[in-house]
Amino acid sequence: MDTEEQILADYKRKQQQFEEQEESIQEFRRKGEQLVEETYSSIRYKVQDSALDSEPLDFAQEELSRLEENYVFALEIEKKKLIREQEENEQQYYQAMKELKESEK
Image (cartoon, one colour):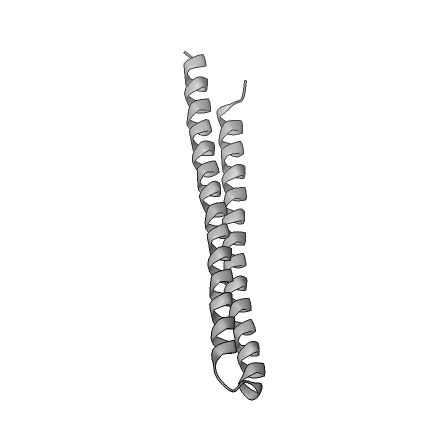
């Protein structure tokens, strides 16, 4: 049987891992946004001199926006999954503490 200290330490360790994963998700999002901006700027620079109209640039911007939306959507799915895992960890912690208290009676 686990002790209260062991249960708490395990809970805190898992929570720390979740926080690190959440930070990674945020970093991926920032890097994705930066990459989209850099890509659009690069395309605009290259197309600006050679295009007679803005159609190629407009198309590129639409495609980049679509890709960014898909990327953000995928990150949001991961974030929601992480939140569910955090909630499960919390429930497991409270359940383990409850069982420990009941076994001490």
